[in-house]
Length: 229
Image 1 (cartoon, rainbow, N blue to C red):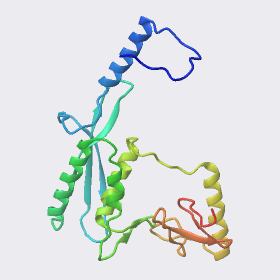
Image 2 (cartoon, rainbow, N blue to C red; image 1 turned 135 degrees about the vertical axis):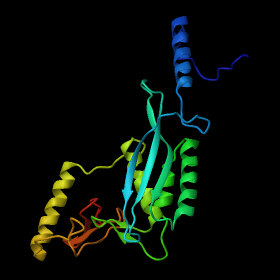
Image 3 (cartoon, helix red, strand yellow; image 1 turned 30 degrees about the vertical axis):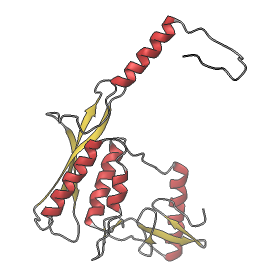
Image 4 (spheres, helix red, strand yellow; image 1 turned 60 degrees about the vertical axis):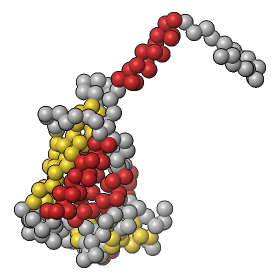
């Protein structure tokens, strides 16, 4: 099929057989890279992690196990993706909806693509009876939200979600703020369930009771978020 050239030719290059072969090999290599999809058969061996959840709403803990499948093992394209999830507990009160949730989440895992959206959906679920605070002052609006938090921790560990860490300058700044606040308010000890002052408020960004007023500016001692920029 003829191709009409509407612009002035400013340069050209002859494509040799070697270049053609290299392009073909590159395309074939891309096609050989296996991505996560629902037709992948479950291997006999999966690698996973188990996370313990203990809430004040129940005397029994929940154990969340996320198993991963290794794609393109032994190659430069090796990738670890979640394949299935199990949630176990002695408390049978939530058995029905927990079982349904594990099946739905496992189905989303096996669909492939960007599944990180599911974390935010789960963390956004609120219990009409009210949430609770974990050790460290982290607020959990519901048990479902804490399941989402556990999945987020797992995704960060396997590299699916980037972990945003504070740099050394930010850590030093927050440490100085914490010291100034303690000296100003005469704090010599902290709460038994956390490392932040008792007067701290809930941060809307990281959902941790670490927000303090310093120099007329609300600053979070946990994530560094500040109302003054």
